[in-house]
Length: 452
Ligand code: PLP
Image (cartoon, rainbow, N blue to C red):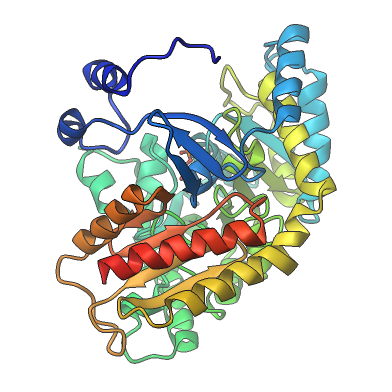
């Protein structure tokens, strides 16, 4: 009964393989085995074209925060398409959806964040952050501040600038030239790289690499530091508690902008509106996407604090914009989505009820599994490190293989759990109930037990 006539799974797979280049995929292997065809979804569940019911432990790509099948979002999009499907916000025009969204974002964002720029994705959000940062330093008379420091194994998207900010080797190797003036320091990943230090000592040590890098480049040349409060695509890596306060101290000391990439962490994932609030630091810019619209339509945004906004506004022309900046349908859906998050008490529920329950259940269930060396997480996000020997934190020689084995078991058992190298990740929709958490955790345990 959908928009498209039903074909057999084999027909869909053949047409898909014939004409569709998939993101981040080995097309050769997809051509051989065919992709799984997802046809509908409700709540925390997906269905495939063979009628299998799958529990979505990843909320799509960490984005369907309010769960699937929200009629109120569909109705808002439908009404907005009839009323004003498109108009731009260039050249002194605006429209009610983008006005309402900006007001609402100012209400739910941390104190001091009152200005928002719109785009279509997290990658474009981080491209925008780069432009804002450079415009800011030019506006305050320090145009030499050009270097941006980010981290190895960070992920900031797949545009040229997003990929350059990120620290994933495979994204750098593919490009002959990356965006200049971006340098990377090490990640705060204690379990994998913590040597003989305590997590607290290690957190400080890795944060102090920022200071060393600033001194090497000259503080007068450094514009900003950007990081995800916890690394998502890098494996749900939670930094030790000492890390972010030290990063903030260093940024303030050397007059460097602190940019939080909240594309995954934003809109409730950790039980706070934004993950940096969990870690207790105060950024100058916030990149948003994913949970902003719960993935129902594409949208990204960048929030800037008063200090940055004042300079940007005083500077005059901001030469950046996208045809779909502040798209009315996306903005209308974002408003309705944020109201669901706020008025339903969903984020408080993640903080006080479902988040703690999920974290505790996962740890209890996997305690006896010899593979699982570390479980990191907060609220409704978790990363599990697979290890050859837990006690010595020994990693598998060819780590990615074990992750893929586990993911294959999940696939066969109708569970979406993501593998990134030798870490398994979970990030379910925020609407997940306790009994659905029981199902998610028991399936995850079963698949990890099969892998062990
Ligand atoms: N930043 C972070 C932290 C992300 O996790 C992602 C995507 O996963 C992005 C940026 C890029 O967002 P998009 O895929 O919407 O461009």
